[in-house]
Length: 221
Image (cartoon, rainbow, N blue to C red; front, side):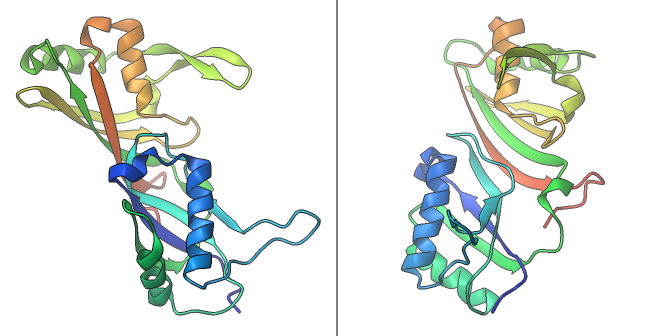
């Protein structure tokens, strides 16, 4: 029996980006059942499958680096787990690798994000320098919904780096953001523009999570 926790790295792209976090949990549980690999369940009056994701992903955001911990009720070779899951997972979900985990999710600190800002009526070449200047500010305080209502957050300390480039109708960005303490959602970048510089806000934006790191910028596994 596998007593150690296992971890898989999963990509979530295409139509799968519209699977919510809770539905993703259910999808993965069903995939294990369909692949004939029983998950280990907790004990007690309300047993539940022992699976957990590192950083819940916002609806509509793609990712190449989702991490999920789980335990199986019986031993199975790690490559076989990935093979079986990929045969039954829906389009857009793909297990890249499975391995034994030796670090807790709390050690995740930074994540790389790529994004695209679409502008229908404005020239990206004209917007680009103003975007760069905006995110170079010492303080970028936005209103943000919290569990207790609405609060303020200065997102500038949560942006380790951010770079922009432009195409014919879009501005692309690559940013390294704080994953935890504080949690920086890439959607906060768009919220900052809409609240503080609406002329620079894109008509549409989408993001892809590319990589996760620890506090020393080592790739987290």
